[in-house]
Length: 468
Image 1 (cartoon, rainbow, N blue to C red):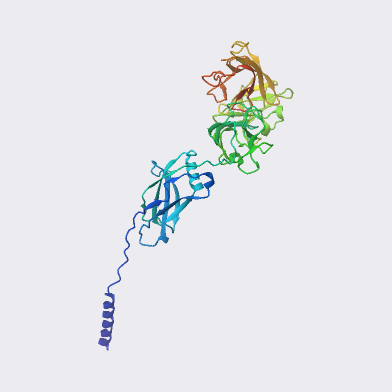
Image 2 (image 1 turned 30 degrees about the vertical axis):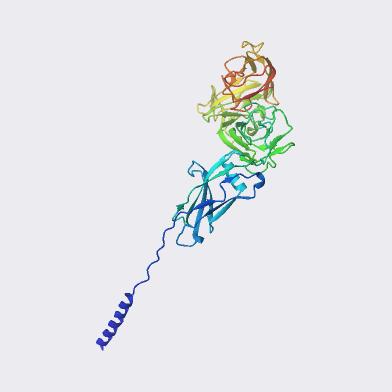
């Protein structure tokens, strides 16, 4: 019986062995594909504004002969100007199709984004990269050259017909005075629709733009100044009415401001933020938040600024690192030293003071100042001063001089050269011991005639002037 069972198992095993030796079906083999051949409906695209929504270019390409059907294929259309080897390409992804088309406005937006001029032809390279949907087995087509001409699109906001643009507002060194300090608050015209400048902002407050310096007839502002983050940029508008002033960034310093009239957009980016100390005291109600500030332009612990102290009161004050009493508060440590535990600092009397403080060395000083003009104009002849008058309401000094061709001048305190300001590098910003104002080799010549000169020292860390 046992031998019978073994025989049966042997037969079954042989049957299984024979079955396992049948030839298996061959695994599938797929040939590789090949680059597509690209063709274009035209090699010249030169539409007009009225053609914006019309199809002006159609691209067709062959099937790359992959082993599967075209539903699993991906095609990337690439465009860039001739000579750049697609280093700054614009792309469009196409699936399930061997062609794609472009409206005039699509190509025009691409060309304008590259910065090409209106109505000037530029040759663009076009190619197609094919692959599977997972990017495997990529092939690059032949390159087709197409001459494209961008057309002019009216700007969203009408640019100033004056070809000039000026900054005015409470956040600026010149405040709401109009005319404004030039060139300190004048934009540079980058092209017909773009204006840019780097300006001083006091921090907080607001501003507008003027196409004509000295006129309020028209300006640029925003439709709604309650929008969040508008101080960093957004949409703007042309206005002939009150409108809404543009909110300024909260922090004091220098900002690069760009207005793009083509798209109706503006941007505000920090260029250099200042360190600040606030100067609350008896003269202004001991309120840090509304107190004048001292600025550290280089954030190195050296601070300076100007403060007007009216008559009356105790003339006491402190320096604070925040616009409240929650930061570091500096008082008098004796002998010209600051102390975080000392009593109040004190002005000698009423007056217009320059304050210097160093929070690294813990030193401080105040200098009473009156301001005057001195220069080559008569009757000064660099020998005597023409005194300026201070207006506490507007926090500015003004004086009048009469100039002839070639005249130059400077500002100085207390009829002494120890503290004087001139303009350096033609920026409109005043600097200690700076160049003569009116020196054509350094800034701008002064037009002959009688002028009202205004000195703005209220923006700590940034001083400027106007000649009217």
